[in-house]
Length: 333
Image 1 (tube, rainbow, N blue to C red):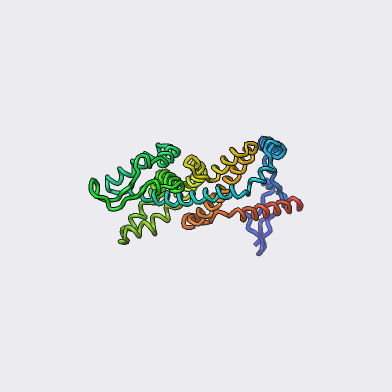
Image 2 (cartoon, helix red, strand yellow):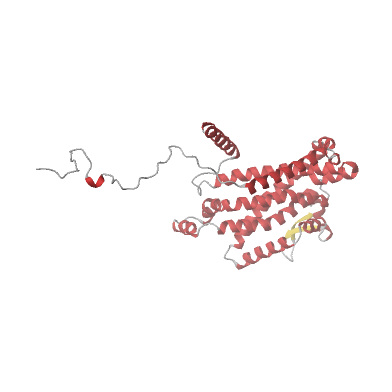
């Protein structure tokens, strides 16, 4: 049996339909290694250059301007009077932050309570202290003894069990801490309430279905989840509290700002370096609080994120590895 002319059939060859046609177009050959050029952004480079020039001019002015008196800044920065004022600032901030947060938690729970009396009182407290300036609260408490010389605990309109002398009880430190705590609790209550409301309703239903006590539900289930939302907002309040401690100078408490003001009145030629000293210490304090905020947020995001955000040190190492890999690619090509 003879085969048709022009077609050779063998046992290992491809079928006729798999053979390339002579008139079929051939695909263009791609190079083995093709480099993709990045898109140019001239506007970005121009803006970056302008910003760097402005930053360089500001830094040059800070360093070379004799008006700042950096030698006097170095003299005052670690003076005992400044460090004593800094210690008072830290004490007032710590006490007010703890008491303000505790008061905020209680006010938030009262605001979410089914009792209309508790809800109304919590709303009234928050409305009042968010409306009145902090300096007014401090001055009012500082002159509180003019209104009430003695404080008593007992039956309303009846006999008193305990009586206190308000002038001895309300020292400058107590007035400062109480005033800041009352003001801080009003803002912290809204932060805590917002965090509690951010917890999914299914968590409440699951906890109730398991028959867990209300106290256990709040302490072990609701509040830890709410902290993811509470932490960044309350740390903003804490940073504001650090700066708000400068107002306690008006109730005769020499904190960091009060010490700077006192020394500025004694040495009027050093006002600018003293203000720079106070500014630098406030920057250091707020930076420390920001670092603590990052790690607290990172801790409470473990159950919400698959990958934890990198720490600043990890970011630096990652950037160095990427730079090294980029240099190696550039060298290879």
